[in-house]
Amino acid sequence: MNIDFKELANTYGTPLYVYDFDAMAKSYNALKEAFSGQKSLIAYAVKANSNLSVIEHFASMGAGADCVSIGEVKRAMSAGVEPYRIIFSGVGKRDDEIQEALNRDILMINLESDAEMKRVEMIASKMNKEARISIRVNPDVDPKTHPYISTGLHENKFGVDIDTAKRMYIYAKNSKHLDPVGIHFHIGSQLTDIEPIKEASVIVADLVRSLSAIDIDIKFFDIGGGIGIKYEDEVTIDPQDYANAIKNAIKGLDVTIVCEPGRYLTANAGYLLTKVLYEKVNGNKRFVIIDAAMNDLIRPSLYKAYHKIELLDKKEDSDTSKADLVGPICESGDFLAKDIELPATEHGDLIVVYSAGAYGFTMASNYNTRGKVAEVACEGGECRLIRDRESFEDQIRLEKAYLKNARS
Ligand code: LLP
Image 1 (spheres, rainbow, N blue to C red):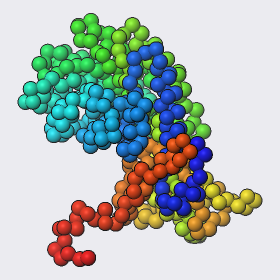
Image 2: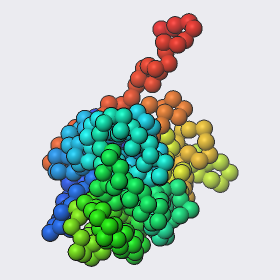
Image 3: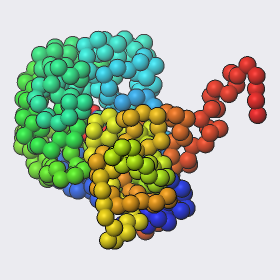
Image 4: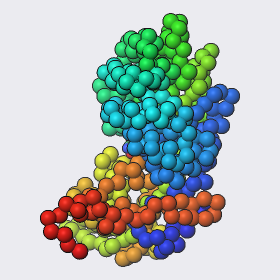
């Protein structure tokens, strides 16, 4: 939909996250459609954008949730995701998290090590339960993405190798308290090349076939997330090619495909609105100082990630020059863009930061005692607030009672 960013900035203030719920639905439907003819579950990777209304939006279309903490599991359930559509992943889970996941009877707990399997078995046995599990296999293929978001190589901390996985499945099959129902792999995020996914799914499907030969029947073939999106000029993966690659790899297997997209569903449906505070020049370096900062959107600082920037109040024929777009935080790494061409700006000019719907708000912090910003959803021509702007009082709530001398 056409979103009136100016009106939203006037109504709700800046910085502000704005999400296009219609665009999210479109991406969800494209992916679901691509898997048609095959049993499939789209388990939205809640870490990408965990606002309750965002999760509720996907849940209303039938999505499940991929969660990496019990907090995310609780969020998903609070937003209406059915427990039998929830997967709990992650390299390290506390005992209380495992216990709570078992209590909530979610679809499966995804195991990332032998030690974790023994822990889950012990807890399930104490609770007199059988834990449905999947095992994350590390297929050792190079996903060709940023090293910080690459996960499918043995040098990464994720999953177990094929031989360990086989031994774990045999152990689980013989355990009264473990029910091995799934297999999982996730080789990285922001993948733009389909070949590594093809390669990994063939390797993992072969493992499923060899497990089936020893009477271990895998029901859920979980291919993780990772579909890349266009931030700048990337040519990325077509959902239909993606689905076809997986369908080909699992030919002859009676499994439900589970896929865990995060970024693909939300990134390009999200915008960060920010206003210019002022400009300055140091030597011959020009800085445009804005009211959003690295605590609101850390991707440029952390990954040198590119986000398209648009100055809405651009004077048509004005000259441009190179500038860094920087926030008010006391760090040189606090920037949203570097060396971009911008016309002269004035106090109050509105800037839109694109592709901010994934790993934007969820990676925000309170650094420099900056409150988390408000979030707005636009759907069917209407926009509404989905998270209040955090106040100073909200921020100090958990500390205030411990002051030696209370102050007003
Ligand atoms: N499943 C698993 C097991 C994952 O680890 C991830 C992401 C996903 C699914 C969802 O991946 P997606 O479809 O969003 O690519 N903060 C980084 C991205 C970290 C991704 C972590 N795992 C960024 O801002 O680029």
